Amino acid sequence: MAKPELEFHAPAAQWRATSTPGQAEQILAEDPLERTCTRLLRFDPGCDTSASGTLTHDYWEEIYVVSGDLTDLRLAEEFAAGDYACRPPGMEHGPWRSRSGALLFEVRYYAR
Image 1 (tube, rainbow, N blue to C red):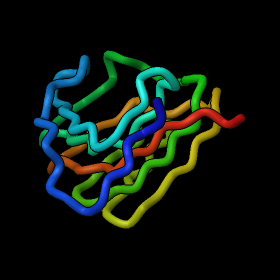
Image 2: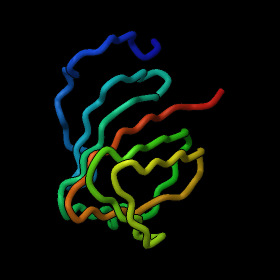
Image 3: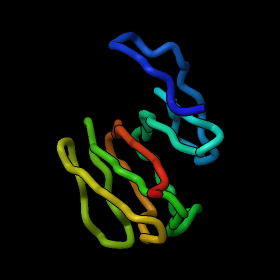
Image 4: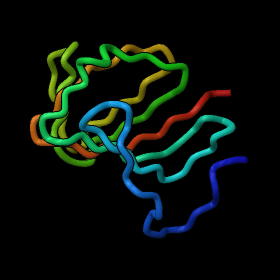
């Protein structure tokens, strides 16, 4: 099943905690069979993902910072609203810390 066809609407999905303390997600659309999704990811103020270490995954990931601040602790670089990342499979990123909290728009997909 592909992601559903959706016209503009208020998302019905509730925010839910992720496996990382201080983070929550709202899934906007997903295809569980293809393991693709579009989501909002929220970092609470003071969230620090150091315990998760550096991440890599087998899918493409595009991230847009909607609001707040996000510091990549490995790169020692801070990102803010309007910043964008496009990560191919296998690209290392994180861990992260947010001083004031952050809201990210994220799309995950596999290239064919």
